[in-house]
Length: 422
Image (cartoon, rainbow, N blue to C red; front, side, top):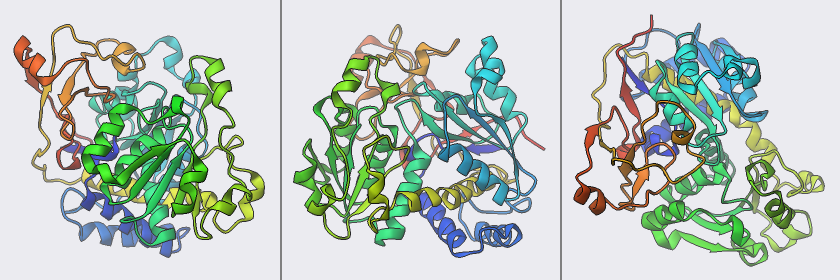
């Protein structure tokens, strides 16, 4: 049986992303509380899709299925919207919202925890504070894994609902001018969103304090994708009049190793009625939430405040994603593995990112790959560039072996497993 995971925003290509949005739109337009009705048209929708989301289904997509949730970090919107999505799809949910109540508190490794939970469920959602943890989880799971946030690395399902919100509110993505404001260094939401926006043909303005600017590795990818679509600065007032949408992020206290650094940058930007006088009357304001002062509550009544509508879209988008991933992994016919790539295992080389899962988890072998856009050698788990070049590795005669799946080509993340579920 083949499995399709959603660990990175790159794991869905444009056609697959469009399938998610099309199904989410149908759910929004339907009576979402009528589970039978929703399941019926989801089944019809799936039967019309091409591989990997279509084909002969074994029944309604999630009726009788179980979602496992493993949340090692606090969450309100993400966890509850996933659970709501699964219940509305006719399935059920097991798992934990606090690792302290699981065997993790006894020292159980992430790999072992995932092997256990995935034997009890049909799809697994994980949030973890360590970067690259979601990809490691996918390599140890018998079922599809969805990344609900891995440290400061990525938050791809948030990106899906952000893109969906922009489509619903603005009618398109291509050509939009979107400002990303606040913590761009540690903000996993903007790490995924910036790449998806540029890929969709939008223009992105990166607005942050100098100490919280977008990581250079991500900037390099954005510029390789479309250098003319990316601008950068620290003045909100300079960019605001030109924006169709402003995506505000919280400066995250929990990501700072030095509390003094947080104190220096907190409160740098505040969006309120006075600030928004400089914006267009139709500039949409979004925020992944929670907010801690960067958007004044008094602005909530402004028609441009779209963040609570954005939150509501989380349920239909995650319903669509879960239904499609379960369908992709319950197809009887094993699909051709189109995303095989050569993984690089340079002798003695470790990921330079101290927050990477390779420095935390037992028995994990560092693995690297050539990033298609920039050509840089990056960690296969957290995407941190390695302090070597492909030429260095070739000269050193580093050993290579074919990985199950570590390719971003075509946006696929498809792996084989010998274990089948009944």
